[in-house]
Amino acid sequence: MGSDPLFIGEWTLEPQQELVGRSPAEVLRVLGDEGLDTTLGRLALIAPRTPVGDLRLPSAEQLRVSLRQTLGEDTRLLVDRARRAPRGTADLSDFD
Image (tube, rainbow, N blue to C red; front, side, top):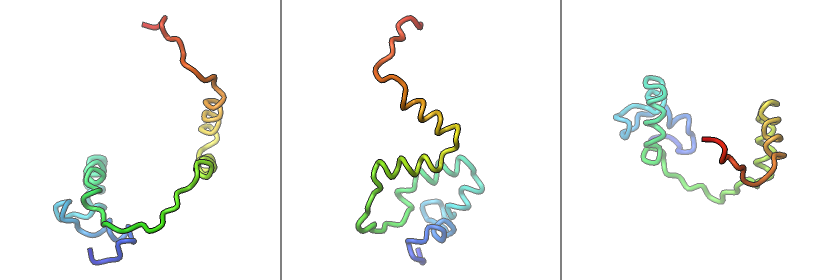
């Protein structure tokens, strides 16, 4: 790869030997969902190896807040309902 490995946009446009000389963008454009499966299935082989340095992952609370901000109102209501649902196991023995 001739460009800076931190620029994913450039990488997606460059031909990759592991994709038979096609770029990831081309594989996705031509093959659609099948191309997505192919690209994701080979991502570990074709993605450039770069050190991540001191990686600081967000806390569970930061993730929760971020997720709530990106969800639609209907989804937030479902999540809140699920949180309030009684805990434990349900007896479904009368269902066949």
